[in-house]
Amino acid sequence: MTDAVVAQKSPYPVEVEEGKKYFWCACGRSSRQPFCDGSHEGTDFTPMSYTAQDSRTLYFCGCKATDGAPLCDGTHNSL
Image (cartoon, rainbow, N blue to C red; front, side, top):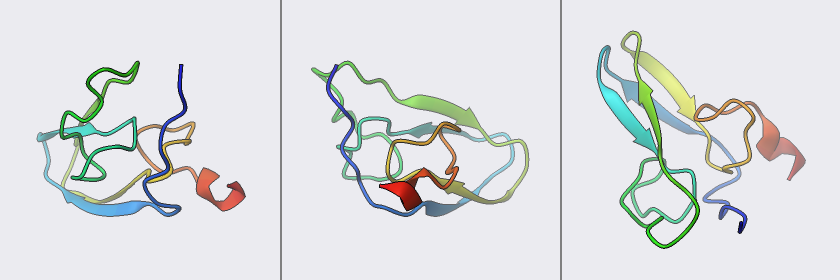
């Protein structure tokens, strides 16, 4: 399996809406970061589904190396 592309070395702040489903890009190739645009086709990656529990700002991982996918856990600080 190939490694994910680091889209950016910081999280993406996103205002999420309660009950809405989001598809986080796990491969790093999407042009709609931090969300999937189908660019993973032909790779071993698949987007991760996330349903917002409430409306607020969340920080989605941009480096694609988080252990808390799809949300940032600070891993980008060690890249």
